[in-house]
Length: 352
Image (cartoon, rainbow, N blue to C red):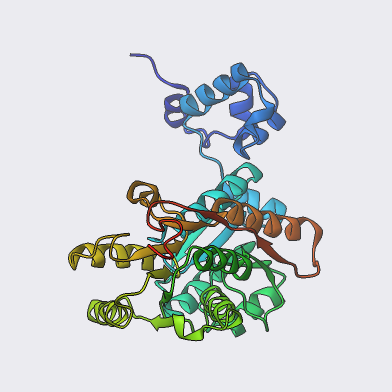
């Protein structure tokens, strides 16, 4: 069996293959190889790409990130700290960010905090030790000092989902206030008489605060604050959620009623608890929530869909723009949500 080019390199004691060796083997320029390695494959003909792939495989070539970093003065690493990686909202944002990151020659380092400020702090330090070039973060709001230090070192920081007023960073999120208002106007027009807002604790989480504030403001403007109930529930304590839902059901007996879930995680917990308690949706209780997870259409749940993929795209674009152009005035990007009406909110319940 014949030796591969890499076997020849090893047996003759020659140094590991370089980008020049790959270019020579593939019959193309080093510039073309660089474009391929940096992810700019769309500018290359399919035949050229195949030649490069074969040459890399034959030589067992491995790009040197260290050499590239020394040459350009960058690590080509973007950090991303998320609050809950199991949340469908998070995974969609990750996809959007990754699809912008890779073609521009950067790699994404993802850290999950589980909404724990101490874990978040440790990840900020860890990513800094990796000399990240930029950071996208859904922050807990308890590590502002350390985020400011990053920015002071000219590392672009972009906040997603959660805005911290005292931090002068770019922020990308859905327009929580407008989306909540539009959904409530629809529900009130349909004749709902009791509306309960179920959320995880809102302190320090601007998205929850904005949705709850808009919820309360709309119902006050209708002159019926008594129709609104707000439940802040720790989802790590299932007894607390069940007690809150039972309490709402008892107090709203005989009324056209609905639960408004703050996000997809809360929405799923409410749906599963309703099934466990034998509550039929929408016969016994209507349901609406923020986010549009894959299972929501299957269960016919009305949602406010967020442009989660685009949030990730926009956040990464802002990081890269700041790396290219330097300091820019902070911008607050509020993307529109979309109300998707399904079976869980039957229309015109008034007088039924």
